[in-house]
Image (cartoon, rainbow, N blue to C red; front, side, top):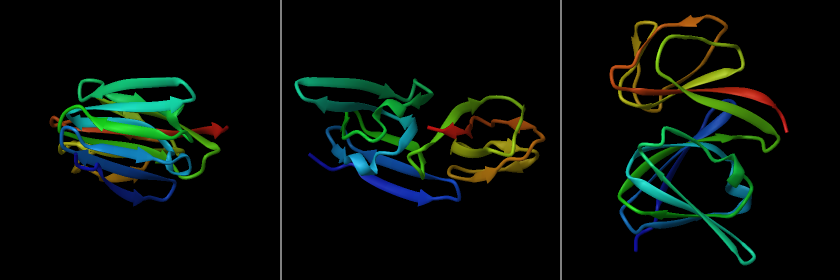
Length: 162
């Protein structure tokens, strides 16, 4: 059995992680490391497993699920099992007391000063500029014209202190 490989990039207000593994790969995140709020599965399928006393929960996530809200696992130990070869990207808070709201954008939208855009896949064009996977930008309160070009973009907005 192989391990899940994890890559992390710290950004100004958040960090992004990417995880990849072959079918059968297994990984574990400790309580203090688990700050992921959203996952996007680029390819494959993975099980997120938590154990608390005699209770075990398993959530199977796949590339068909879009942006997955995984806040319920924040600050909890989590096991990940690769049901298939997979590649996923996570959006993580830097500070455990800050909540974020995330969504996938499929068309033009208005941004706000508390939001960030992240490219999860492909080469979308935003206001005429072509972007690539892992590009990110702080948004402003203005209109953003989107041409997805088979790409996927997420927008994350600071919601409040929790």
